[in-house]
Amino acid sequence: MELVKEIVKEQSLIIGENLARQMAIESGVVKFNSSKIDDLTVTEPNRDMAIEKLIGSYKELFGQASVEVCMNVIKKFPQKK
Amino acid sequence: MNKRIAFSALSIVLFLFYFIWWLYLKQFVPEPYTALNDYYADTYGIMAGVGGLIGLMVATKYGFLKSYVGKAITFFSLGLISQFLGQLSYTILFYVYDIENAYPAFGEVFFLATIPFYIFGLWFIGKASGVSVSLIGFKNRISAVLLPLAMIGASYSLFLRNYDSQDLPFNIVFLDYVYPIGQAIFFSLALLIFYLTNNILGGVMRSRVLFILFSLLFQYIADSLFIFETRAETWYPGGPSDLMFVISYFLMTMALIRFENIEDELRKRREANVSN
Image 1 (cartoon, chains in turn cyan, blue):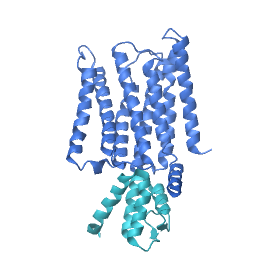
Image 2: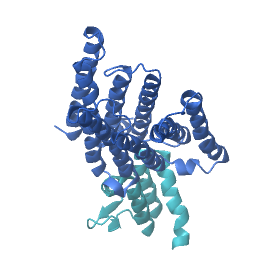
Image 3: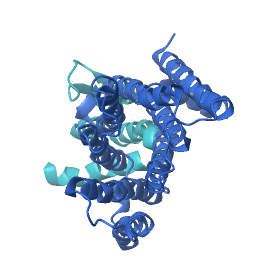
Image 4: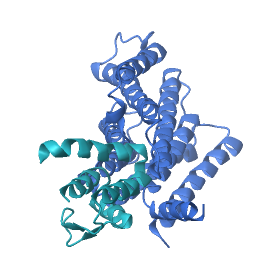
């Protein structure tokens, strides 16, 4: 689930690694394997559900502004891949 | 005691101390040039210094300079620290070197530095709050150009239209132009961020960002009042503009402290959502 990693990394640029990690954990869809922000495992098997929950968690911080950041990552993602 | 409560308690105690001191001067000291007035004007910058240090500690929660929010908090904190150092420089000149009314002196470097620090702070808080998303629209792009220009025009009209620079040294003329225009730039940026993010900024950060913008309004009022008083030659130590600076430092400090603990509010919101 590279997209989930990209969303978490992008959010860490806005709110810092600690908070980005904490919000990702609270979404209940990821587990971090080390102190690195992109060393994570997605525990939710349904991809769309995982992304929706993750975005919902970040939305608690900056509202729609956080959602737009995530949407920009999603839009860019297929090209990156 | 958690950090937020400790920081808030320290800031409130300092604010009350200077607020009560100011009221005392107003009520019981009719002569504006007493030692008590001088001590007031020479020390209230401590509030900005303490606020700036608190802000730097808060910034570490957001990775310091590794995130937009961390950078914003750091630059606002450096702005506060600059205010403190500016005042400290003049205080040292006055008490150590016995130089009175040394304007413009080295301390102006620090006061001037506040302007770019606040502009950088606003830039990054704007980025975190979704300004770049809002700037996609044509109307918003036009506003992003027109609003700062309008504010600079208004400041020019208020402070510089009838300004007579004849016989004044270059450094004074330079500062007399740079302060009102620089302050207009950071205040217009604050207004612009409010306007551009009003429909997009939400969550627990909304009130925090708005609090920062609100505190900058007070900083702008304090700066403008100070310029008015000095131009009209009505400024005196411990006067109205000094109180406005005390209020603006206090508000900025409290705004930065609000970033320290967002977990409680997140928890409350989640509990409220569950119970609904």
